Image (tube, rainbow, N blue to C red):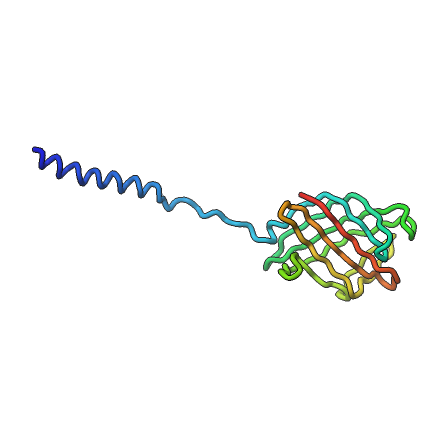
Length: 170
């Protein structure tokens, strides 16, 4: 009788251990999908935009800008229309701008595009100016989620260099 019990218990114990290990290794769990870098940048950011004229004069206002992930690991950046009062050129209203196809540039540490001379325009006080070379944009995010967008641009025949810098968070 003891032999029969041993012969039955040993295989049953083996199958019990095997079934517990199979349950813990279930293949029904779906792998966690990691967002792409472009998707990590996507969202609406609230913060401050600073417009520097000739690296000497600064004017600021609060805005929200949006970033959307595009195809092939690119992003699109959209700035709303915003106004600056009391600048050296008087009150200014800069029209909304959308720039697409920014590609991550590891050497620059962010999504980048040089778009001067590509037909983009910037509306300032209702007048549309072509954006000449050098005109570029870089979008970078630090480990704390703070976003910085630096956009030096050269509109039309304006003799002074302009740089718009946005700093914000989701």
